[in-house]
Length: 199
Image (cartoon, rainbow, N blue to C red; front, side, top):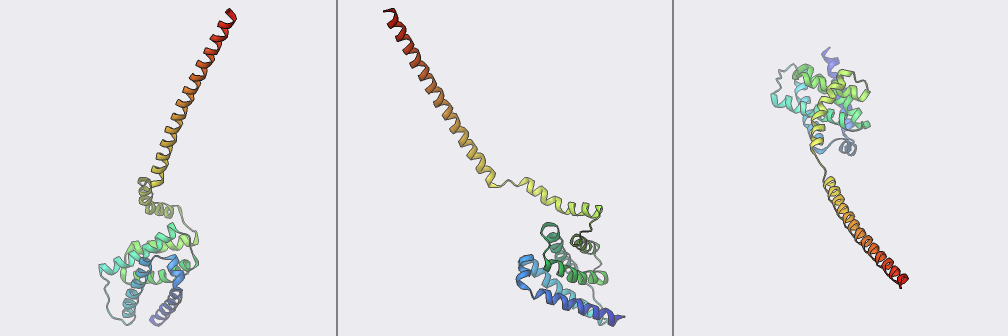
């Protein structure tokens, strides 16, 4: 049974390494920090699972668990906020399966398992109502930040509108003055014409 499990582990690992060779595509889908975490977590998991398959005792530290959780968060943030690229889909199916197995065997962090399943469901488009609510809760802090953020363009447009408003008011005043001058000249003309007729 252990030999079969080890063979499956090696097969997954070979697929992951094959995907990671596409460095340009990886850089497009994952940030520099994301790629770094993926590499660090992979090395950590390989080291610990190799010991498990050799029947050696392994106890992940809190730092190990935090690193793995942060790496899974990289995947979930992309799945929620970005478009699903082929390399992201392929890496999620293999890499996150390895992480899931590590978590089942060693990590035992409930949120890691939950988030891995969520990424899988987002990719397959099989979200339930509860999953959707969970995704929205994840996304809510970002929406609140966006609500507080006011782009500089808004300030510029306000200033521009104020200038236009002032310009418009100036034009109105000029028009009023011009109108009053015209009405005065017309009155003077009418007075002169009346005086001529009297004569």
